[in-house]
Structure formats: C-alpha cells, structure tokens
Amino acid sequence: MTQLVEGAELTDKDRQDLRVLIDRLDRKRRGSGNRGREPGNVKGRAMEKLLTLGLVNAASATVLAILVAALGGCWPAGPPRCTVSGCW
Image 1 (cartoon, rainbow, N blue to C red):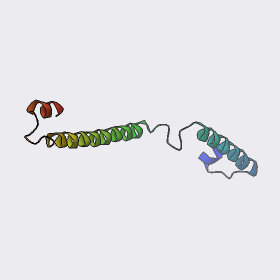
Image 2: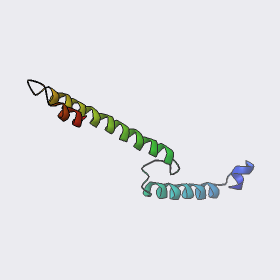
Image 3: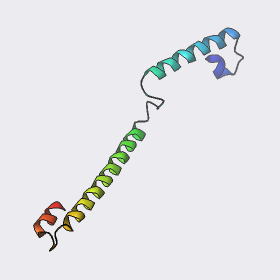
Image 4: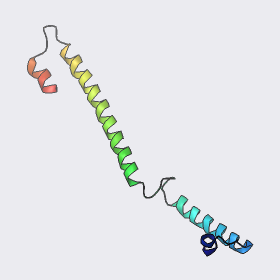
C-alpha cells in the first residue's frame, strides 16, 4: 500500500498480493447479502421504502374511493346518507 501512496512501481509479487486481497474482499462483499448495494446507503433504502409505502397508500385510497362512489350510485333513490358518509 505504501507504493500506492508514494507512487512507486509495484513489483510482480506486490501486484499478485494486491489481486488476492481484492478478490478476497470481493467474495466477502458478494456473500454479505447486500445484493450490490452499498452498506452505508441506509438513507437511500429508507427513502425507497417510504416511496413504495406512499404509492401503495395512494393506490389503495383510489380503489376505496371508487368503491364508495359505486356504492353511492347503487340505490335508485340514492343511498342512505349515513352509509356513504361512514364509508368516506
């Protein structure tokens, strides 16, 4: 590592040792279960989960609103006011 900092030439042995170290660390990272994500990217994963939660919430609210609107149109004389108000 000091060769890298000082800018000196690496010997073949140093290159080989560095390659072994990189391969070993790469295998550890792949086996850790991160699936390619950075371990420090907690903020990004939290935002992704919040965005997904918000989209699911909006979609379910839309479906429920459509159901209540359909329920309101089912009765010929109009639905009982308390039924529709209770659904909203």
